[in-house]
Length: 299
Ligand code: CP
Image (spheres, rainbow, N blue to C red):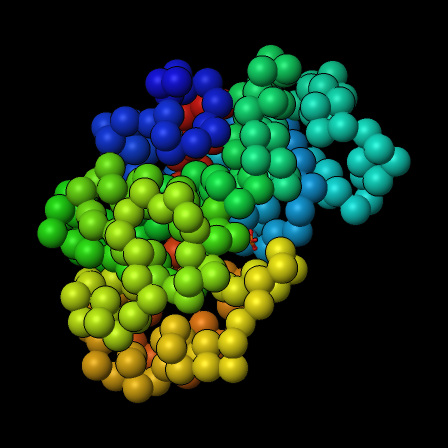
């Protein structure tokens, strides 16, 4: 399905030019920073954050983005909603729509939950992370962060390693789609048991040999809550340790939240460790990217 600009559900729906249009608008918001003078495209509109799974970065940045565009928001969190009484995701969304919200931001465990909501409601739906397959706003903000770091929208010639618990990572799956559209080569790195069988890019279990060839690393959290397990030597084999970091001069990213001392050493994760540490830049890009998406769909 081609992107129709009505919902934002998957990067598979967007062309390279669709991505670049949103990324350039996000870059405009980043450049404007505190000097951004809103024309308030969301004035009088309420955005519903329908989060059936926990979130810090995604939910708060949608909230900040909505407010910066002059809109208001309502939060509906799974644990305190009537989903705990068995109400379905679609019924929940239909009730929010009946209250007059202008758009619904959905995070859920169902792989196609946002798509199901989108075919049942009449307002724009944005996928804020679904199951283990899709986190398109994260991948778009990562693309914004990386293209600004490299100084080019064209990532041809760049090679990005996505490292860790790929099997449970919607960030990895959306990023391989987005980064490939922009021309980058992507390699998934991790222990065999945390690599997917259906990867649509190169895979490796040898971090050091891949690290010597890449211009950026995206370290991923081991998702213990989804059943991942690690061996005793996980940090030594797959962690971005101080020793590895000392010899690496590319972009360092992590979508958060971080297991400090496991997939990335404490000192490496700290922002002052290096100008190549983009971890908090990703968070800043997240607000601007979500502003661009909200403005495009709802503004
Ligand atoms: N990166 C990300 O999705 O973080 P949250 O789960 O805190 O939203």
